[in-house]
Image (cartoon, rainbow, N blue to C red; front, side, top):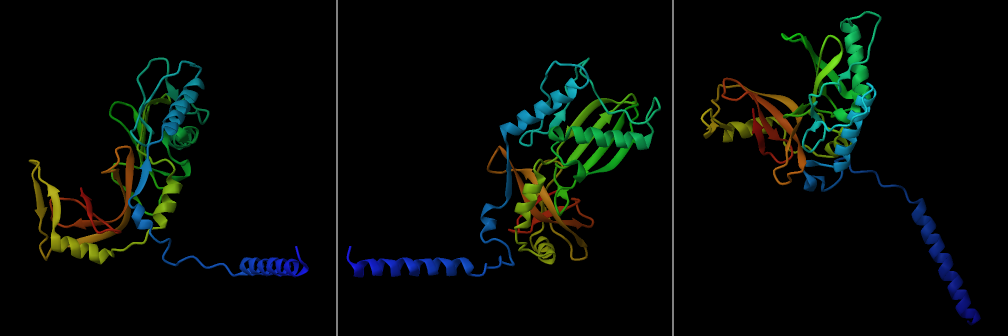
Amino acid sequence: MTLITKNRARRTILFLSFALAAGACAPLQPPSATGPKGIESAYPVLFTEDPHRREAAVLALNQLIQQTGNSTAFAPELQPITATIRSLPSSPGRSLYLPKVGAGAIMNEEETRESLRRFIKDSRELLGADPAKLSLIQRVDQPDGSKLAVYEQRPFRYPIRGNYGKLEIRFAADRRVINISSTCIPQGDRIQIALAALNVRLKAEDAVKQLREKGIPYTEANGNASTFRIPAANELNARGLVVYVLPSKTQLDSLEFHLAWEIQPAAAPVKAAYVDAINGETITVE
């Protein structure tokens, strides 16, 4: 290689080094104030069935059973998709018990709630919920002598609607757990991240206006589809944004999560209508 060629190579290398250094020192671009572009292309947010989650739920239950001194494994009835527990199989000798709290033979109400809290903490894999995001909404004594505790899952910025987000524990006075049913959503934090990236496109007043113009579709008691035309004098109350969860219309192994306006009509054959805040569709009525 000639001296001239060597000098040219050195100058080229030096130029590239300065260019790379300048690029590294360039200021970072701030994120878009409106959130990531194109997120709506993946809307609604999906939660897909995972066989590993099902295996983890079965393992969690059997570990709880083993703590009672019974080493025989069995499979619980699990919810589809979420793989949270649907019901405990009735099997003598394999009973679960709430932890004992307090010195008395029978726990008082405060001790019972603490016992439930500890049980939920130990059962989180089976229940599919972070204990810190479960709120006790009902604690009642049943006519048959059993006791019922009902919890509401609150993993998102907005409340859950649809047939999800509830935990029920039925137990006896001797702390024996009679049944557990959970429709909680596992991995709620991950879903919240996806929901937080969405841009609400439909305002509450626009959702109300849309229902007034198009009416509320619903199914009559005889099964016929109908539309309720809202009289001008009828009030439509937009209660706020919710996360409506329902089985996916296109993927049998998934749940859909929609951001929606919950709208309550007065003097109507339905209690509430849910209008999607992203695409404007009426998701469902209840």
